[in-house]
Length: 419
Image (cartoon, rainbow, N blue to C red; front, side):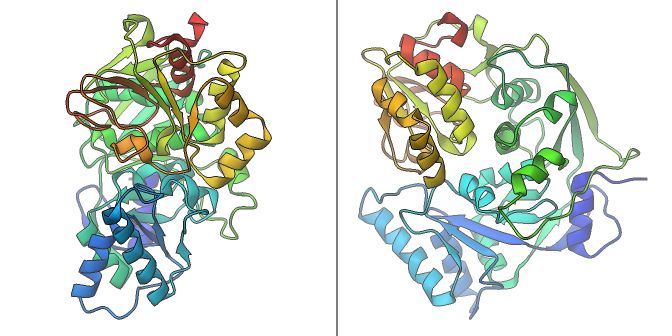
């Protein structure tokens, strides 16, 4: 019996010829990462273990991105602890303010993840790197503290659900819509500790930005990881970013899947997730013109240059509606700089948007866009649970960057076609 791409990567990192779903294996970690919320807890565990050195100073990434620039004394203390730990252990990949950005944007951008890698992070959206053909998964800070000391961890081999996307996407339909539609099918608990393998002609045509979006939200179905087989699109993205070409694993023709789901995308519309769950999904034609107090364009899901470019194309020569706050946060300094060069930032400013520094910001209700009681927001981020972006009696809708731009202009949830 053959193996899936996930099983092959896990077997390679366990030093075994093969693995099967349900097996508990010890694996070597290629990259361990944490942010300003999760790193301090992991560092405490590391210290409590009595460890004297991290397992490899070149294979640890510490990214302050949730509350930066520091919004208060507590967040400043968190980042200070990270900084001092990084200096003490000579950690190469600590990203200081000015070079930092959203962790799941900057690590692939800087070539720290290659196809075939095994990446473990103390953040649930670590699954983003599956877009590159890596196995990547989130763990708790306690587990990460042990990984910092040993470079190893235990994993249960997940069963795989194969998702086959067929047909051609319509205008304004992207990776965000494919994954939202999929969440509508699976539900938030439909793939608990499973691997979601994204395949089919429709995803083969996706750019890396769209693939990152889909892999990022695999965890919203409860999945352990989401993954794409690396191809020439992956190879082109990696060129010039890393001196590690990686390993281009792919699933065997006779690999065993727990389930196979086929999704035809030809007639798919932009999708909107209604409060208060990412799986409460409707096509935009079935969503009322809900008035909006705020629109947020950014996050590790949709803060890449391609996302900003798509939104700016709709905003050119237009203004955000009066009474609707429009917040844009590029995912990294290099994306910010490229958006400046292309005139994208100027377009946003002319439309009345506020541009924030590269960070997570409003996505988790951190800062720079907190919702008050009764307010409604449309966000390009990945979660809309109760209180996610602010007051527990606020509402968050999720959609793609084009819908975000159209909605900012109209002041209510709107399709780009409405423009």
